[in-house]
Length: 144
Image (cartoon, rainbow, N blue to C red; front, side):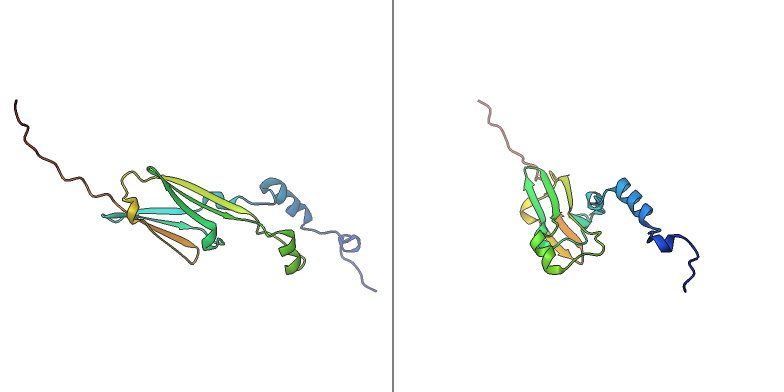
């Protein structure tokens, strides 16, 4: 016969359940960790280089749009549909879910016709060449 050291084993008590319940109550079951992705912007002299960590996103889930002097970087990863979940089996633990990120940047000093983006290993690298300063224009006015 087995001797239990604690009464918890007999009742099926889950020692970590209260901790998980507290964590879910505090953070919510669907984390918003991606709402603050890490982004670096470097000035290389002739351009700006933005590097944004977007782990877990597929390339087609990331959008970069330009409107006037504003660049918008957004990424949305949606949860699987019920049909997709059923194909994958029953989850025993699920921590990954819908996540999204959006950032707007002033690009008034950027040549938007030369933007270049690469997404590799969860890092988006966006190269934004600077606008060339306008050459000073000199002209003579005719006196009437």
